Length: 169
Image (cartoon, rainbow, N blue to C red; front, side):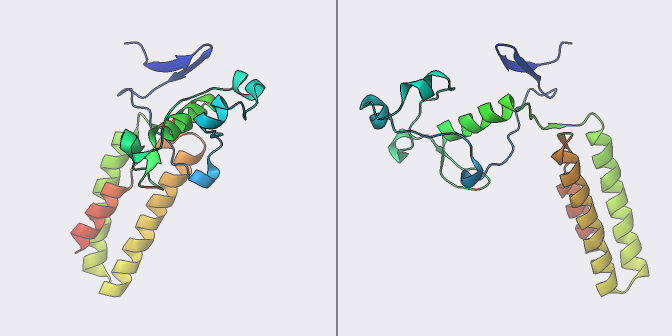
């Protein structure tokens, strides 16, 4: 089967097997997209040369337009800004995707989390067991964050954390 890709012109980026484009969370203060008012463009207040060498996306931010979406940092982000973030992310070549081995890592993580929780519950005092479990899950989360940083590999540490604390409880 051919690999699913998304691309524009010479830029071709492979997607995950499910063809999902996962967006990296972006704070509004970190956004690099330039926003200009349509009224300013129509009134000639925006330099046309800037628009000529830019990717231009049109959209509205009025609630009546229905284009406001929740994001990880803001409950009301205009859809056009989410699209702009996606384009910028693609232009940088950053497309986070689950690693081929992610399922095995998560399955192993679930098993290991349950076994460590049982071991801590039976062999350590309650406070020491809880602290040990918290430290181990912090290491798992740190590992997932480090994996996602450079090689763009996603491993979800949430389910093993929930299993560990559920088994421990």
